Amino acid sequence: MDLKERVKMFMEDTGAKLSVFSRKVQMSVTYYYAWMRNEVEPSEEMCERIKAYLDEVYAK
Image 1 (cartoon, rainbow, N blue to C red):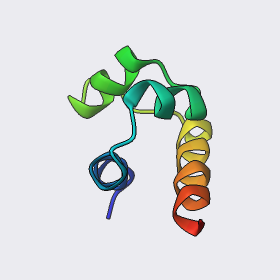
Image 2 (tube, helix red, strand yellow):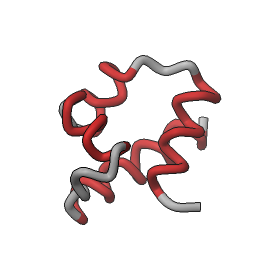
Image 3 (cartoon, rainbow, N blue to C red):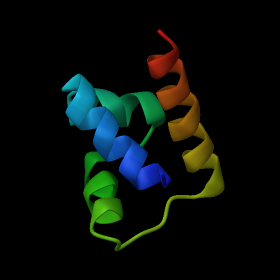
């Protein structure tokens, strides 16, 4: 499963607010929507922050 799909699943499974997720991974809401529309690709550093956050949340 790619990272974008993991994020979508996380948002659906947890009911997390986009503003909270964005703050935790240091991504603007505008950038998040652009990413979901395939208009931008996050940097490797941002991908690592997202993966680390998802791993942390699902480990709990």
